[in-house]
Image (cartoon, rainbow, N blue to C red; front, side, top):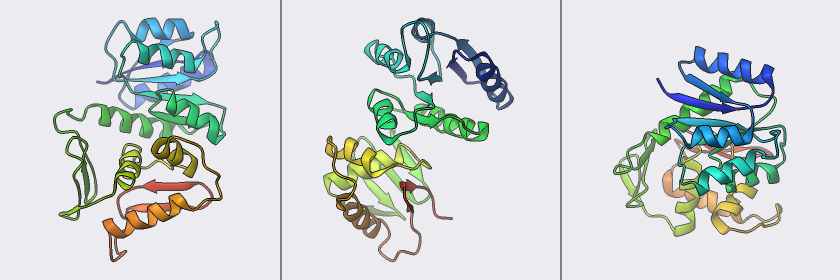
Amino acid sequence: MPTVLVVEDDAKTLREIKVALEDHGYMVETATTGAEGVAHATSRPLDAIILDRMLPGGMEGLEVLSALREAASTTPVLILSALSTVDERVRGLRAGGDDYLVKPFEYVELTARLDSLVRRAHTSIHEAVYRIGSLSIDLVSRAVVYAGKEVELLPREYRILEFMIRREGQVVSRTMLFEAVWNYRVGERTNVIDVHISRLRKKLDPTGSAPIIHTVRGSGYVLRAPD
């Protein structure tokens, strides 16, 4: 049974998350302050951490996250926050978060995202292969195979695909891709990302018969297996 630490100061929210996760098959441990969360997370093995952004006691969520990463903790962290702007989501991910869920949320989405984080964390380091439908990426050799054929990608095309496959089923914005692949902010009006996505789609699926990269109008893109 996977063990999850929930760091949340609101008693009602903490109780509801605990019940939802236990009903879903998780063993749940809790902390209500940042300092308590760091002490707990660095003292025992965990499968994942759910971390609230706004915590009392002088140590907010991103400070907790920084402390964990500085302590060489590789436990996947799902950030919960009412701060919903793209800039805030990017801050959370760049600080070391593995996923970011905006409040209010549905518990079915919380458990689905948590399942994905735990599943990815359990991928063997030696294999390090992500698979979605007919697509597979070997993170060690950087080999990309789609529908049984190896696909040759340019460096930035590969980095876009790797960033998206690590966030399977999640919408990633153009700003997030710019931050991750180009390491700087670019105006939203540029079509650089659209051009790279278009090329990537054609290389993966030249006929367009089984698209795996889907456009979410007004939001960005999502990588998921063909319907």
